[in-house]
Length: 469
Image 1 (cartoon, rainbow, N blue to C red):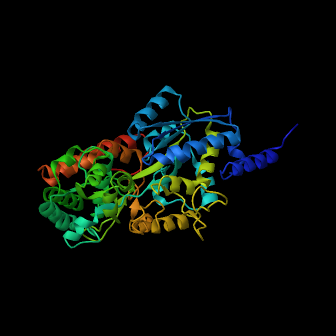
Image 2 (image 1 turned 90 degrees about the vertical axis):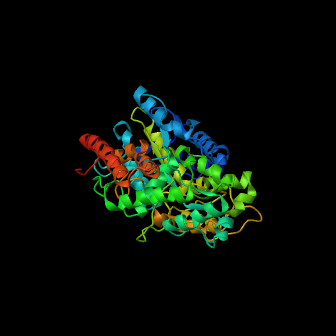
Image 3 (image 1 turned 135 degrees about the vertical axis):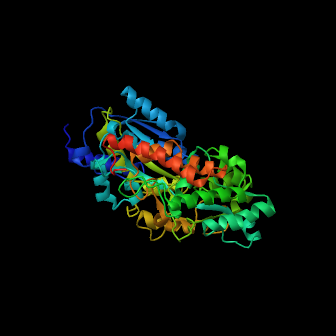
């Protein structure tokens, strides 16, 4: 019996609906693959149910529906960089690799994903700018990755502590951290939790601070602009904040340290995603009930920005013979992003806010009048489906505006390979830590600028970034 491609698509679509997976009608350019095998590597999600209850099952069912043998391997987030480098060096490995940051440094060794990015924007609407800037190189006109989502990085604070210093709604400005956070440390013995070490959260916090003080590593044209009076002002501020509201342990923190401090009742405020709060809900409910959230803090001139906590990027290494299958999978994955948000317990935020919600059983209680991912996301922020029974409603409502005050690591420019190396070598956290330990802020900034310029020069010579200095 012969079967046409149109008949095959109809049968595949029917099968995916029966399995609870929204069907994707693939473009012909994504339709062929040498073999029906797809190997996926990604980091173990911070919310375990995302992997255990949803993603792994979704991938398996998608494979069964489309006649593809799908393998999903999970590793620790901090191992992704070395594993990606090893597989690319060996010329073999996984067909799809999920990154937690812009993998711009791998552009020469990955498949150009312009086609699927264009396809996704046709189907799902405009992509959030921070996601585009985290996956597209404007100099080479190439998408080195496919960014499916990102993670919000709000301020998380203990309301009972801030009530005692007469600031129950939490901090609104960076100066509040010194004024009120310092008083909490002095009077109540509880410090702030902003890292000054060589780890992920310290990296994010340092950028958030710099932007809020109207400075940055690069300008929008990819020129290094780090050494300026506003950076020096920000560095001097952090030295004062450390003295008034923190303790030496922040110099040796790892990514889970601020989470652990909050859950243990040893931090009045941290910069982190909602994962720390979710952990507290399960481990120390009384602490969770006391955790509330604030948006990006206002800098001295009213500027407010926060770095995304993580940004999800899938890459397809050039050695892969399954790039068409990988793109097919990603389009289907995007059609089911409402489930990705739900099973991550709202940890994941979408790259495509205007994507429509598919009909049928989605695995969660339907939200009346929610037609797009944005509608659904905002409804859940207003009425968190995972809040504790006697917990205050609407604690996450402040996150509804996060797309307005969140940006990418290369702000105001793109997240290019030079920015990636400045990030991975911890230039900014080291700069802040040196000042907090007593170095003159001007010297700390000057040394950081010298490192940044050398990094930018290297990548500019490779033709992968713009600018001239």
